[in-house]
Image (cartoon, rainbow, N blue to C red):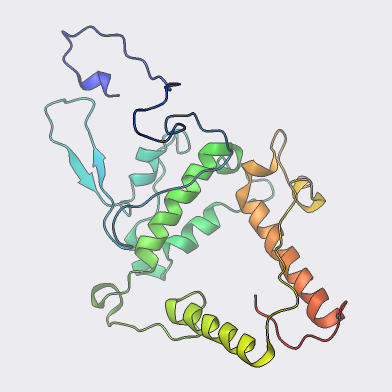
Length: 246
């Protein structure tokens, strides 16, 4: 794409190359090719800052760059033309104005697997991961941005608002109280998952592995955590719990 906007008189053969040399005064693995099946996103600035999304016209090279918001309805098909080959609209703020659907609600619905519904997203392994983290960044920027302009008044989130700052701070204080009154914990449990869990493999589409369906892995993982807590708290495989934190 960069080559397309260069001067037509310059005939250069462009190539993309992953360097195998150790960069000078840098970490030796800085330019290594990716070796893990994970996708992440880094957002510069404070949460809620506008992301710099730039459009460049291919038909008119003299047209100035155009910046758009990630809530512009054409952002999804412009950024992911392989996923939205018909140019379907993505989320925009008008949806929120009409039926109070947040971007998180919209994309959670869009990523669901349904019977007799061919969902293209679920069949694009790493592309699906990129799409998820991108839309998550959009939801974080928009759904958590409570201002007098979009909700009518400023709202201070109460301590019982799950995963809010006051909620997390309260649990940290409770943890310190437990230790002060009861002593140090007897068990510190870390829960992980196996890609071969039958609850995951039975739901995979043909040719998929667990890493291709992070949505499925997350759902199964949360269900198994709830079952583990039930065994520890209610079945009491060790003893009756004096206290616990999760």
